[in-house]
Length: 392
Image (cartoon, rainbow, N blue to C red; front, side, top):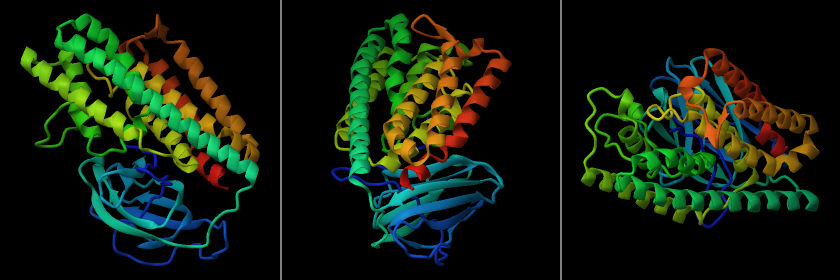
């Protein structure tokens, strides 16, 4: 489970923004005020505070430079006004590291959170994005590309969600019936559809922990449920003194997973997307690879991490290709670089195919894991510039 997300909303398109934690209220560093200007703000995430350089910002393109002045890896979230739905996030910020996020922020109220140690609800604050005249003129030709990207990505997410629901229904049926061999075979196939839209699924902060929490990430008192609990029951070989679930427990957890998947599919139908949200989602999916899949932490029991790896890359590539025509017109060199880096990473993945799937993570050599890591890092750098290029 990871926590990087698209900007989403119910009936109306909500563009991604990232906001302020803390109480300081100073003006953004860029105050030129001309239409199309980028407003630059800074965020300081320490062990016990989360301070933004402004408590208010004008609607438009915002760039947040998030610096970790603490001694734990941190994350920075923007949540909807209700504090539940995740709008956008920048993660995996190590001590003394600064990471930037560029987004197009509409007027509204937001809840923000820094998460030192990447656990809990985080250090929360508020950000107000005010109405402004900072609207970038978009040509009719570009608007057509924007609308096509948004519509195509919405269709992709809805299709993947529908396939996730179908495969989950089949999977829980096999599991409840005690057909463990068939359930094990279907597990990574069903999970593929989750991983392709993981940043979307994770935007629902109430559903994600119930469906995708890993045992190692559970907080004190948190009840475990979802995919990875069932994974452990199907692959208990690495567990010490494990007691298999009873038939009644299997039925309870399986039905619970299916119910949450149905709820996810219902919510997905109500979502719309913006191009900067799609671009940030592409980056977020690759971060999912870097923080869990390439390290072999995601599928600790089944060792099916390469299935997830491939699915995250699939989703990141689809999101990128959706906005690629826009980027090609604005920064052709970046578009070419991203296309090449995606292709190079795909070659490495294809080399580990086995039948219709992939080899187990434990079969990779340290050299192969490093090669994957290097390729992910090589793609991450230009992908971090994708949103800025889309909004330029």
